Each structure stands twice: as structure tokens, then as C-alpha cells.
Amino acid sequence: MIITVTLNPAIDVTYRLSRLTVGEVHRVAEVSTRLGGKGVNVARVLHQLGEPTHAVGLADEAFAEALAKELPSTFLPELEEVRRTLVVVAESTTSLWEPGREAAAGADRRLLDLLADRIPAATAVVVSGSLAAGLPTDLPARIARRAAAAGVPVLLDLDDAALAAAVGTGAVLTPNEDEAARLLGHALDDPAAAVTELAARHGGPVVLTRGHHGLVAHADGDCWEVRPPAGVSGNPTGAGDATAAGMARGLARGRPWPEILCDAAALGAAAVVAPVAGEIDPDAYPSFLADVQVRRIDREEP
Image (cartoon, rainbow, N blue to C red; front, side, top):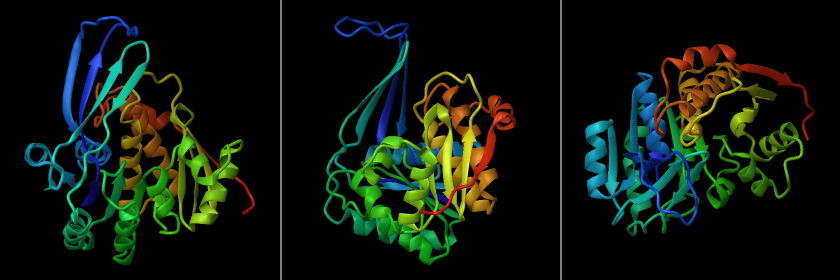
């Protein structure tokens, strides 16, 4: 059972237009609305792949009840309301994200109590996304340490203060290039050097996600570059969550890192061509997996 944790869920709304022009009125051709948040999307992809998974997090009562009808999940009603995110897909993709609502006092303690009963039986734990207002920035790091103490592999897809607090936990960190640059305090002129530097600071695996450029990872003393299939186009929203799902599946199964990274890159590409976040195109996935390229980069440790 892979546990995903979502600390700032969202109701995801996607508009599809032929074009988007600022200042004009548009008639939306297609609308989709679904319950979301990064950890929820990771759980959806895992569920679609047939992997046993359980989504855990904080929400309002309506969100928690509705999600439980769709996915195996337990969300504590600790938010007065769940935020919304709007994605407009036209010539390019534009995203508008509302801020997270305030979590109830003591929500972090109640969530940790819930996870304490579930983590020992888990095969992997994924904590993804931002934190609702009022939650301590070290909450994902505390979850990671509890999982590590139980011998359960952990993946953290975080940003800013929460990502900084997670350094040193030993969990798998998956920053994008902007997040890694802010954490390191300098531009990523050489992604392989940057991921090696960050892994040395962290003392654990680091996977740098680079969108259509693929992945650069440092794990178990080796550095890897992964090139995704070329020419993939569509909606990139949720591709990172599918990539995280692939890594979580690989960690849960104890696969070697080259296999984990190839599968993660293929799933990310299969999410780009899917219509909405939290899904992959199951027909495209096998061909993408065959087209992924991975190579080892020889680097000296900093």
C-alpha cells in the first residue's frame, strides 16, 4: 500500500479554448472539474496503474466525503474550505491557483496520529504539494522521519520552506529547476553538478525534474540523466504527479534507480497527453517507456 499525503488539496477546474486573449470575453468550449491536489493526483495515477494506494490529507467535509467515493482515502476535515485551481488550455497552458485556506489548530498533530497507524504497513509514502496556511513548514519532514524510522521509503515533492526543512531527512527529494535554484542559492548552470551538490547536502537521493528536458538524478552514489520521448505535447499539468507516482511505485517495489527513473519519465509523458491532471494515457505509456533514454553521468562528489 502506497500512502500519498496532500496537505493543501484543491478543486481542479480545466477550461479548454481555441485561443486565450487577455481582456476579451471567451466562451469556454469544454470544462472539467475534479477533486485534486498533488498527492491526490499521485494516488489517482497509482490507482489507474492498479497499485494499492491510500490517499491521506486535510480537507473540508464535502471534499473528504466525495473523494472517498472515488478513491481509497482518508481526509481529516481540518479546512473550512478547499481552494480551487483553474487551468486554461489554449495555444499554451495558463494556471491560476488560489491560496490554501487556514488549517484548524492542532491539525498537524491529528494528521500525524492518523499516519502513525498507517505508515508501518505502507510500502512507500509520498508527500506532495504545498501546505495549507497555519501548518508548520517542517510537517512533511516530520512525516518523512516517521516513515524512515519504520523502514518505509519516502518521496517528498515540496517547495521553498518545506523543501528546505526536508533536507537531511534522507527522503527522495524531487525539486524542479526553480525550486532547486532557490534551495541552493544559485542558478543551475550545470544540472548534474547541481543535483550532485544538493544530494551531498541532503545525504539522500535527489531527482531534478526538468519538464520536457527530462530528469537528472543523484542516488546511491550515481548520477543519471533521463531523456523523455521527443515531440510529446499536450497539457503538462499533472505530469510531475505522474512522475512522482512512477518513482513511488519503483521505490515500493525496490527497483534499481535506472528502472525507477525510466518508468517515471514515461508516466510523466503519458500524463501530458491525457486530458486532465491525475490521469495517464494507458495506450501511449508503453511506447513512451520504450523511447525513454537513460545514461549514467560520471561525476566526482563535491
